[in-house]
Length: 82
Image (cartoon, rainbow, N blue to C red; front, side):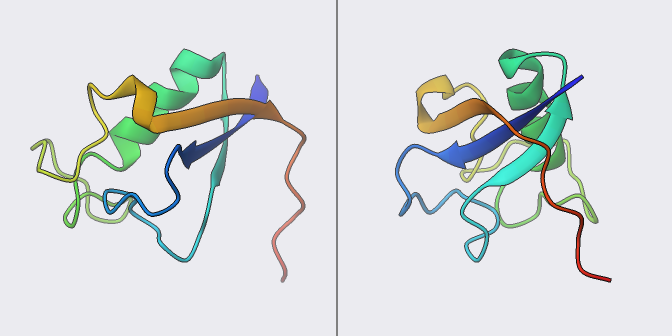
């Protein structure tokens, strides 16, 4: 699998679930898979997070709005600080 960076097209988009993190890096088969994984992990705002997922698509969801996210192949991210 490859690494992909997912970020909002508009940095001020209020739907972005992690305002303190400008982009999320994840492993996926391709860009569409990366988008699907992101939407699965962050289904809606404010209730959709990896720690508290929800199946409901709230007003903060990126689901169905492919143009709102930029998904680009990227390098392996650095290891987190221990």
